[in-house]
Image (cartoon, rainbow, N blue to C red; front, side):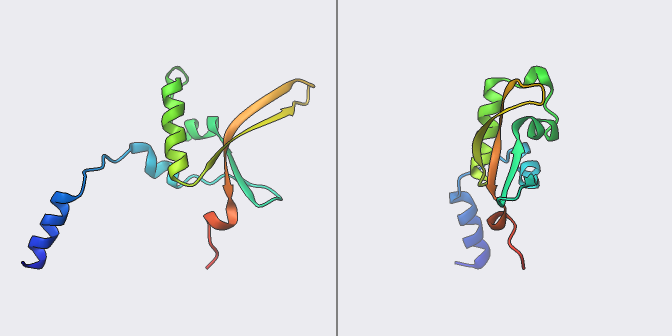
Length: 105
């Protein structure tokens, strides 16, 4: 069997994976790195980068985003804190270890 025939046979056996239009853009996202070495980004920032309109930010959209971010090595987090006005606020987003995400050559 020639190399070309082996290549075509391998392509036929491989399952076709539909490419997600968000994956490439999310793969290039860089968050803010804090003093603890964790890189963080909010969910709303990600949806702004993906140009998802407010009316389309449904539960399904958030589930889709969560699945892709997990595949890219991010962990979902919730941060609760007080705002300057003294109100409690919860922010959802993702974090990862910045040292492992961007190895220094």
